[in-house]
Image 1 (cartoon, rainbow, N blue to C red):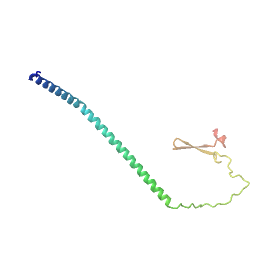
Image 2 (image 1 turned 180 degrees about the vertical axis):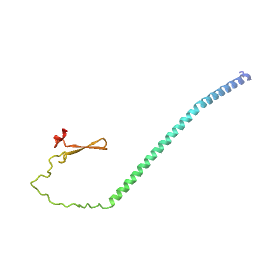
Image 3 (image 1 turned 90 degrees about the vertical axis):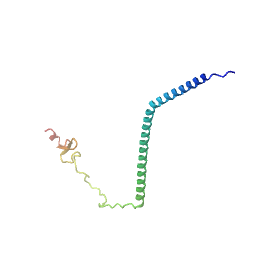
Image 4 (image 1 turned 180 degrees about the horizontal axis):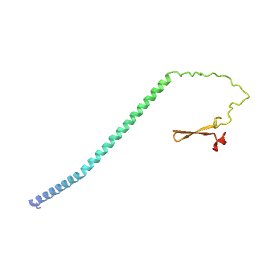
Amino acid sequence: MCKPSRSYMGTARTADAVGVLATVVIGLAVIGIVGPIVLSVGRAVAEVAKLAAIGIGSGAMIAVIIWVTVQILRATAGSRPASRIYLTARQEPARITGKPVSEQNCLTCGDTGRIVRVIGQGDSLRIRACPDCQPAQLTR
């Protein structure tokens, strides 16, 4: 068996070293170009996650405060006695009479002969004759 010469082994090592060096340079170039983009996307994702955590935490805190408030109000409402309702008006038995309950003839104006018309948002009012009980005044 023959041993290969030393010059061949040196060129193989040099070629391997150049290949490895070229691969490292290309890898570093790709990392140099893509790295900042990945870093900015990672920062944006971290900001979104932080804002989502703040929103979820705030919502949970508000829900707990509302729940505690409702529980306190239920406990205080259940512990005190109900207030009594006192009627201040005199109650008399109903009497049946021969005259009608209301002596008004016109339901629109209540026998005043005039109705109030509101114009716009209530800033101007117009009084005019009742169309049901005074049709003669409408012709003016």
